[in-house]
Length: 299
Image (cartoon, rainbow, N blue to C red; front, top):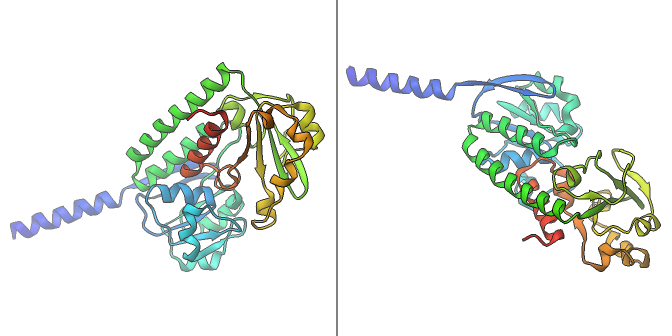
Protein backbone atom coordinates (compact mmCIF):
# COMPACT_ATOMS: atom_id res chain seq x y z
CA UNK A 1 0.00 0.00 0.00
CA UNK A 2 2.83 2.37 0.87
CA UNK A 3 4.48 1.72 -2.53
CA UNK A 4 1.15 2.36 -4.27
CA UNK A 5 0.69 5.66 -2.41
CA UNK A 6 4.20 6.79 -3.38
CA UNK A 7 3.53 5.92 -7.01
CA UNK A 8 0.24 7.84 -6.99
CA UNK A 9 1.91 10.88 -5.45
CA UNK A 10 4.71 10.73 -8.02
CA UNK A 11 2.14 10.53 -10.80
CA UNK A 12 0.26 13.49 -9.36
CA UNK A 13 3.51 15.50 -9.18
CA UNK A 14 4.21 14.80 -12.84
CA UNK A 15 0.67 15.83 -13.72
CA UNK A 16 1.04 19.08 -11.80
CA UNK A 17 4.25 19.93 -13.65
CA UNK A 18 2.64 19.21 -16.99
CA UNK A 19 -0.44 21.24 -16.10
CA UNK A 20 1.45 24.45 -15.20
CA UNK A 21 -0.23 27.48 -16.72
CA UNK A 22 1.50 30.45 -18.32
CA UNK A 23 0.22 33.87 -19.33
CA UNK A 24 1.61 35.36 -22.53
CA UNK A 25 1.24 39.03 -23.40
CA UNK A 26 1.06 39.86 -27.11
CA UNK A 27 -0.20 42.65 -29.33
CA UNK A 28 -3.85 41.58 -29.04
CA UNK A 29 -3.93 41.01 -25.27
CA UNK A 30 -2.92 38.30 -22.79
CA UNK A 31 -3.46 34.60 -23.37
CA UNK A 32 -3.39 32.03 -20.58
CA UNK A 33 -2.82 28.35 -21.38
CA UNK A 34 -1.12 25.22 -20.13
CA UNK A 35 2.59 25.11 -20.88
CA UNK A 36 4.07 22.66 -23.37
CA UNK A 37 0.87 22.20 -25.41
CA UNK A 38 0.83 19.17 -27.67
CA UNK A 39 -1.62 20.04 -30.43
CA UNK A 40 -0.31 23.21 -32.08
CA UNK A 41 -1.79 25.03 -35.08
CA UNK A 42 0.40 27.63 -36.77
CA UNK A 43 -0.65 30.47 -39.08
CA UNK A 44 2.31 32.20 -40.72
CA UNK A 45 5.73 31.26 -42.04
CA UNK A 46 7.79 33.22 -39.50
CA UNK A 47 5.83 31.64 -36.65
CA UNK A 48 6.27 28.18 -38.22
CA UNK A 49 10.02 28.79 -38.58
CA UNK A 50 10.29 29.70 -34.88
CA UNK A 51 8.13 26.83 -33.65
CA UNK A 52 9.92 24.29 -35.86
CA UNK A 53 13.33 25.56 -34.71
CA UNK A 54 12.25 24.86 -31.13
CA UNK A 55 11.54 21.24 -32.01
CA UNK A 56 7.75 21.59 -32.02
CA UNK A 57 5.79 19.88 -34.81
CA UNK A 58 2.39 21.47 -35.52
CA UNK A 59 -0.70 19.42 -36.37
CA UNK A 60 -1.71 22.00 -39.02
CA UNK A 61 -0.05 24.95 -40.76
CA UNK A 62 -1.14 27.66 -43.18
CA UNK A 63 -0.53 27.11 -46.87
CA UNK A 64 1.61 29.59 -48.79
CA UNK A 65 2.63 30.20 -52.40
CA UNK A 66 6.27 29.95 -51.37
CA UNK A 67 7.82 28.06 -48.47
CA UNK A 68 11.48 27.93 -47.41
CA UNK A 69 13.17 24.64 -48.29
CA UNK A 70 13.80 23.90 -44.61
CA UNK A 71 10.02 23.98 -44.03
CA UNK A 72 9.12 21.93 -47.11
CA UNK A 73 8.27 18.95 -44.88
CA UNK A 74 5.09 20.79 -43.84
CA UNK A 75 3.61 20.74 -47.34
CA UNK A 76 1.95 17.42 -46.47
CA UNK A 77 0.68 18.59 -43.06
CA UNK A 78 -3.06 19.45 -42.87
CA UNK A 79 -3.84 23.03 -43.86
CA UNK A 80 -5.09 25.64 -41.41
CA UNK A 81 -5.98 28.01 -44.24
CA UNK A 82 -3.99 30.67 -46.05
CA UNK A 83 -1.67 33.27 -44.52
CA UNK A 84 -4.47 35.85 -44.52
CA UNK A 85 -7.60 33.68 -44.26
CA UNK A 86 -7.66 30.91 -41.63
CA UNK A 87 -9.85 27.88 -42.28
CA UNK A 88 -11.85 28.02 -39.05
CA UNK A 89 -13.68 24.73 -39.59
CA UNK A 90 -10.44 22.86 -40.26
CA UNK A 91 -8.74 24.45 -37.25
CA UNK A 92 -11.70 23.54 -35.01
CA UNK A 93 -11.48 19.94 -36.26
CA UNK A 94 -7.78 19.85 -35.37
CA UNK A 95 -8.68 20.36 -31.67
CA UNK A 96 -5.66 22.57 -30.99
CA UNK A 97 -4.29 23.27 -27.52
CA UNK A 98 -2.87 26.54 -28.85
CA UNK A 99 -2.94 28.57 -32.05
CA UNK A 100 0.16 30.59 -32.99
CA UNK A 101 -0.88 33.28 -35.48
CA UNK A 102 1.43 35.50 -37.50
CA UNK A 103 0.75 39.20 -38.23
CA UNK A 104 -1.11 38.44 -41.47
CA UNK A 105 -3.73 36.54 -39.44
CA UNK A 106 -3.88 38.92 -36.48
CA UNK A 107 -7.18 40.47 -37.59
CA UNK A 108 -8.86 37.11 -36.95
CA UNK A 109 -7.70 36.92 -33.34
CA UNK A 110 -11.16 37.07 -31.74
CA UNK A 111 -12.54 34.26 -33.91
CA UNK A 112 -9.45 32.10 -33.42
CA UNK A 113 -9.56 32.62 -29.64
CA UNK A 114 -13.03 31.08 -29.55
CA UNK A 115 -11.49 27.84 -30.85
CA UNK A 116 -8.38 27.68 -28.64
CA UNK A 117 -5.95 29.92 -26.73
CA UNK A 118 -4.35 32.10 -29.42
CA UNK A 119 -1.03 33.95 -29.38
CA UNK A 120 -0.07 36.56 -31.97
CA UNK A 121 3.49 36.13 -33.20
CA UNK A 122 4.24 39.68 -34.37
CA UNK A 123 7.21 41.90 -35.00
CA UNK A 124 8.10 45.56 -35.34
CA UNK A 125 10.09 47.19 -38.12
CA UNK A 126 11.12 49.96 -35.70
CA UNK A 127 13.31 47.53 -33.70
CA UNK A 128 13.28 44.16 -35.44
CA UNK A 129 15.85 42.35 -33.34
CA UNK A 130 14.46 43.45 -29.96
CA UNK A 131 10.91 42.56 -31.04
CA UNK A 132 12.06 39.22 -32.42
CA UNK A 133 13.76 38.30 -29.16
CA UNK A 134 10.50 39.07 -27.34
CA UNK A 135 8.57 36.73 -29.66
CA UNK A 136 11.06 33.89 -29.23
CA UNK A 137 11.01 34.24 -25.46
CA UNK A 138 7.21 34.09 -25.41
CA UNK A 139 7.21 30.86 -27.40
CA UNK A 140 10.06 29.53 -25.26
CA UNK A 141 7.88 30.04 -22.18
CA UNK A 142 4.96 28.26 -23.83
CA UNK A 143 7.02 25.29 -25.02
CA UNK A 144 9.55 25.20 -22.13
CA UNK A 145 12.51 25.96 -24.40
CA UNK A 146 14.00 28.86 -22.43
CA UNK A 147 17.57 27.54 -22.26
CA UNK A 148 17.75 26.78 -25.98
CA UNK A 149 16.30 30.17 -26.94
CA UNK A 150 18.54 32.20 -24.62
CA UNK A 151 21.59 30.45 -26.05
CA UNK A 152 20.46 31.25 -29.61
CA UNK A 153 19.72 34.89 -28.76
CA UNK A 154 23.17 35.36 -27.23
CA UNK A 155 24.81 33.79 -30.27
CA UNK A 156 22.95 35.94 -32.79
CA UNK A 157 23.27 39.09 -30.70
CA UNK A 158 27.06 38.77 -31.03
CA UNK A 159 26.65 38.41 -34.80
CA UNK A 160 24.53 41.56 -35.01
CA UNK A 161 27.06 43.50 -32.95
CA UNK A 162 30.02 42.38 -35.07
CA UNK A 163 28.27 43.39 -38.31
CA UNK A 164 27.06 46.70 -36.89
CA UNK A 165 30.50 47.58 -35.56
CA UNK A 166 32.10 46.78 -38.92
CA UNK A 167 29.62 48.79 -40.96
CA UNK A 168 29.77 51.79 -38.65
CA UNK A 169 33.54 51.83 -38.36
CA UNK A 170 33.90 51.54 -42.15
CA UNK A 171 31.03 53.95 -42.89
CA UNK A 172 29.41 51.45 -45.26
CA UNK A 173 26.38 52.90 -47.05
CA UNK A 174 23.56 50.92 -48.62
CA UNK A 175 20.50 51.41 -50.79
CA UNK A 176 17.69 48.88 -50.37
CA UNK A 177 15.29 48.28 -53.28
CA UNK A 178 12.55 45.83 -54.13
CA UNK A 179 11.46 44.62 -57.57
CA UNK A 180 7.79 43.74 -57.75
CA UNK A 181 5.41 43.52 -60.70
CA UNK A 182 7.62 45.62 -62.97
CA UNK A 183 8.14 48.36 -60.38
CA UNK A 184 11.21 49.25 -58.35
CA UNK A 185 10.76 50.72 -54.88
CA UNK A 186 13.23 51.81 -52.23
CA UNK A 187 13.22 51.59 -48.44
CA UNK A 188 14.92 53.65 -45.73
CA UNK A 189 15.51 53.54 -41.99
CA UNK A 190 11.82 53.88 -41.07
CA UNK A 191 10.66 51.09 -43.35
CA UNK A 192 9.94 47.38 -42.96
CA UNK A 193 13.63 46.80 -43.80
CA UNK A 194 14.89 49.36 -41.29
CA UNK A 195 16.86 46.57 -39.63
CA UNK A 196 19.54 47.08 -42.28
CA UNK A 197 20.25 50.56 -40.97
CA UNK A 198 19.27 50.32 -37.31
CA UNK A 199 20.58 46.89 -36.33
CA UNK A 200 23.06 46.05 -39.10
CA UNK A 201 24.56 49.53 -39.06
CA UNK A 202 24.52 50.52 -42.73
CA UNK A 203 24.45 54.25 -43.52
CA UNK A 204 21.62 55.39 -45.76
CA UNK A 205 22.86 56.18 -49.26
CA UNK A 206 19.75 58.35 -49.68
CA UNK A 207 18.25 60.09 -46.66
CA UNK A 208 14.60 60.84 -45.87
CA UNK A 209 13.10 58.10 -48.02
CA UNK A 210 9.33 58.21 -47.62
CA UNK A 211 8.12 55.31 -45.46
CA UNK A 212 5.67 52.99 -47.22
CA UNK A 213 4.62 49.37 -46.84
CA UNK A 214 5.83 48.50 -50.33
CA UNK A 215 8.45 51.24 -50.67
CA UNK A 216 8.89 54.53 -52.51
CA UNK A 217 8.70 54.19 -56.31
CA UNK A 218 12.05 54.78 -58.06
CA UNK A 219 13.89 53.88 -61.30
CA UNK A 220 17.21 52.52 -62.55
CA UNK A 221 18.24 56.14 -63.19
CA UNK A 222 17.53 56.91 -59.54
CA UNK A 223 19.80 54.06 -58.44
CA UNK A 224 22.56 55.20 -60.79
CA UNK A 225 22.36 58.76 -59.46
CA UNK A 226 22.37 57.58 -55.84
CA UNK A 227 25.44 55.44 -56.67
CA UNK A 228 25.40 53.26 -53.53
CA UNK A 229 28.49 51.37 -52.45
CA UNK A 230 26.13 48.55 -51.41
CA UNK A 231 22.94 47.64 -53.28
CA UNK A 232 20.52 45.27 -51.53
CA UNK A 233 17.71 43.84 -53.65
CA UNK A 234 14.51 42.05 -52.60
CA UNK A 235 13.12 40.13 -55.57
CA UNK A 236 9.38 40.03 -54.80
CA UNK A 237 8.68 39.07 -58.43
CA UNK A 238 9.47 35.51 -57.35
CA UNK A 239 6.41 35.66 -55.12
CA UNK A 240 4.18 37.63 -57.50
CA UNK A 241 4.98 35.29 -60.40
CA UNK A 242 5.00 32.09 -58.33
CA UNK A 243 8.70 31.37 -58.60
CA UNK A 244 9.39 32.96 -61.97
CA UNK A 245 11.47 36.14 -62.07
CA UNK A 246 13.57 38.10 -64.54
CA UNK A 247 14.80 40.64 -61.98
CA UNK A 248 18.45 39.60 -62.23
CA UNK A 249 18.47 40.03 -65.99
CA UNK A 250 16.65 43.35 -65.74
CA UNK A 251 19.10 44.71 -63.16
CA UNK A 252 22.07 43.72 -65.33
CA UNK A 253 21.94 46.94 -67.34
CA UNK A 254 24.35 49.79 -68.03
CA UNK A 255 22.84 52.08 -65.42
CA UNK A 256 23.29 49.57 -62.61
CA UNK A 257 26.67 48.43 -63.94
CA UNK A 258 27.97 52.00 -63.51
CA UNK A 259 27.34 52.01 -59.73
CA UNK A 260 30.00 51.42 -57.10
CA UNK A 261 27.96 48.54 -55.71
CA UNK A 262 28.06 46.64 -59.01
CA UNK A 263 31.70 47.40 -59.72
CA UNK A 264 32.87 46.49 -56.22
CA UNK A 265 30.81 43.30 -55.99
CA UNK A 266 28.46 44.57 -53.30
CA UNK A 267 25.18 44.00 -55.08
CA UNK A 268 23.23 41.33 -53.22
CA UNK A 269 19.88 39.64 -53.78
CA UNK A 270 18.53 39.12 -50.29
CA UNK A 271 16.82 35.83 -49.48
CA UNK A 272 13.11 36.46 -50.12
CA UNK A 273 11.89 33.93 -47.57
CA UNK A 274 14.04 35.36 -44.79
CA UNK A 275 13.48 39.04 -45.46
CA UNK A 276 9.87 39.07 -46.65
CA UNK A 277 7.95 35.91 -45.74
CA UNK A 278 9.41 34.26 -42.63
CA UNK A 279 9.92 37.47 -40.65
CA UNK A 280 11.22 36.87 -37.10
CA UNK A 281 11.80 33.18 -37.70
CA UNK A 282 14.93 31.75 -36.08
CA UNK A 283 16.39 30.27 -39.27
CA UNK A 284 15.20 33.33 -41.20
CA UNK A 285 17.11 35.65 -38.87
CA UNK A 286 20.20 33.48 -39.25
CA UNK A 287 19.82 33.77 -43.04
CA UNK A 288 19.49 37.55 -42.81
CA UNK A 289 22.77 37.66 -40.92
CA UNK A 290 24.40 35.37 -43.47
CA UNK A 291 23.19 37.58 -46.35
CA UNK A 292 24.70 40.71 -44.83
CA UNK A 293 27.97 39.06 -43.84
CA UNK A 294 28.38 37.74 -47.37
CA UNK A 295 27.68 41.19 -48.80
CA UNK A 296 30.31 43.00 -46.76
CA UNK A 297 32.81 40.13 -46.81
CA UNK A 298 32.65 39.54 -43.06
CA UNK A 299 32.99 35.77 -42.80
